[in-house]
Amino acid sequence: MSKKLYAKVGGQAVIEGIMMRSPKKDVLAVRDQNGNIVVEPMVYKTIKGKCKFFKLPVIRGIVGFVDSLIVGYKSLMRSAEFFASEEDEKKTETDAASEVESDVDANTATDKKEQEKSAGTTAMLFFSALIGVALAVAIFIFLPAWIAEGVQWIVRSLSGNAEWVYPIWLYSVFKGVLRIIIMLVYILLVSLMKDIRRLFQYHGAEHKTIFCLENRKELTVENVRGFGRLHPRCGTSFLLIVFFTSMIFSILISLIPVFSNMITGNIASRMLYTAISILFIPIIAGFSYELQQYTGRHDNLFTKIVSAPGLAFQKITTKEPDDDQIEVAIAALKTSLTDDDGNFDASAAYRVS
Image 1: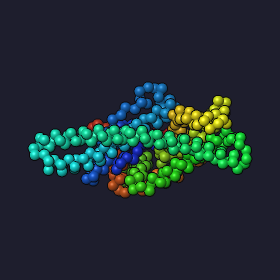
Image 2: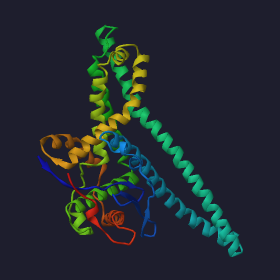
Image 3: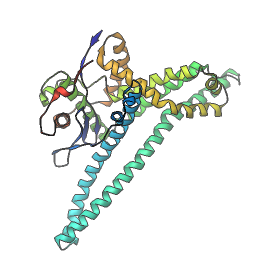
Image 4: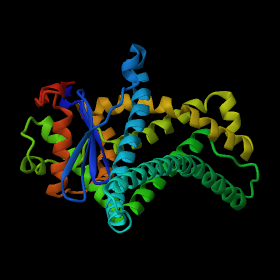
């Protein structure tokens, strides 16, 4: 069984930048409107480090999933605030020049407006996140269930059998396939947006930079440019693994009488089953994490089969970055592996699985 040298680093594309995580620290690198790369530390104490129990297999996947959501949200929120504050500064400078006579009054007005803008942006992003979660649940969990109900009604109408219900295994498989199709259509549609395409370019820059590090090459634009943008430990691949794992998990739990009775019951009982299935998401994420980590660390026929759908999907969620975006990714990765004394140490990230 072939094993790989891999870097224990990961990241996320954000608005005009990249958040990078390493064993040393988490950082956010953004290219501002003046063309400068600004790097900031992301201060967050992981849940995993608080208890040895959280480091156990499967459990660490659940905890890591929660950690990633929190850090990812904080990074995205900060990148949005960064650009919002830049626009506000320009507006404030214009207003101050025309409306405020003294420098003291101008500074006071600027500080007040910055605080109000920051608070407003934070609140807006918080509610946006809540709406996003609600939409995700509606689109990827309840919408497939309603489509399945519609198909069942069509089958009953065409067959003349008003009592027809899905075989238990088919109900789980059909909903799982629908989720994958819905996600594919959704990603294809949003990829048409200019801002999302730039986000996907930064996503590609993140992968290329990590590949460069894993191959022990110097982190330069020229070296990074030569690597591929499809990475087996990507979050996109993780989502597909989650969907496939949830399909298998749904088949297994449907063998339990209480759940099988819900599936073969009326529409209300099936909707209840769908709602209850949300509670299993952390467990599914934990198993999916272990599977993805295995595929990222080993090279054999099994891992190639498991990784293939995710790598194919990344052809949509990653785009070829330009040199400016690669520079941001390099800045993020280098800073994440630099200690407090300014010493860059890539060896901290290397692991042989």
